[in-house]
Image 1: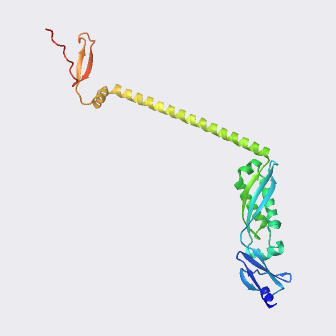
Image 2 (image 1 turned 60 degrees about the vertical axis):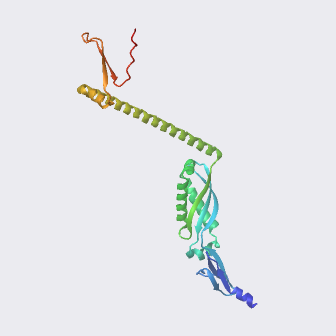
Image 3 (image 1 turned 120 degrees about the horizontal axis):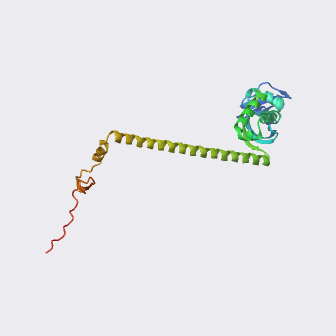
Amino acid sequence: MLVLAAAQATYVVQPGFRGVEVTLGKVSEQFKPEGFGTKAPFVTSVVPVPVRQITRQLDAESYSSDLQQVDVSMRILYRIPEGSVVRIFKEYAGDPFEALIAPRVHEALKEVTALQSAEQIVKKREEIKVKTLATTREKIGSLLNVEDIVLENITLSKELEAAIESKMVQEQEAAKARFTQQKAQIEADTAIIRAKGEAEAIRVRAEAIRDNPGLIQLQIVEKWDGKAPLVIGGGSAEGGNSANILLPLGLPATPSAPARR
């Protein structure tokens, strides 16, 4: 009997929990911290309430602005502050998810999705998540800390999903066509600029040669390889119809025909 009484007179609150002391049905306003303690045997109990982060799964149904049904699967991450441990125990038996958190998340999600089309809900997952989280926090207040909402899956009807997918494919093809047109236009503009540059270079070169006749001789001298040319005159100078042929010196001489005997 003494051993049983000694066991009933002590309690242990595990890490990540706070204890709520209940004596003959009356709840103490001060929670018990984690660790070992004593209590009145048989008439007092210490009920643990978690203060660490808790993750719960939630499936919700809502409707878009174009009256399409949207099914959302999400995870809710929340935490009970130390200051709310006793109140949560009194009002929600230590587990506020089903009675407090889930209904507020449902309300927030419906309010947010009602302002967006089904297509935008699929495209703007992060925006939907952020607005739903902010609205949920406003509804719950400081009683609980809703740490985050993770949207795992957004499901539409098969017909609507097929229509959205078809529209996205068409938009991608249109974007690809615009890119191809822009690329062709850039290439055409580049070719025109290159042609104008070449024409301008030819014009400048022609004007330089016209204004400086010695320029051609200068270019010949600059490109000369250092070998003296051999000039062979053709035709009669008097006829005014002669041609000069430049041959490099140092070429092997053509062997002369043997003398006839």
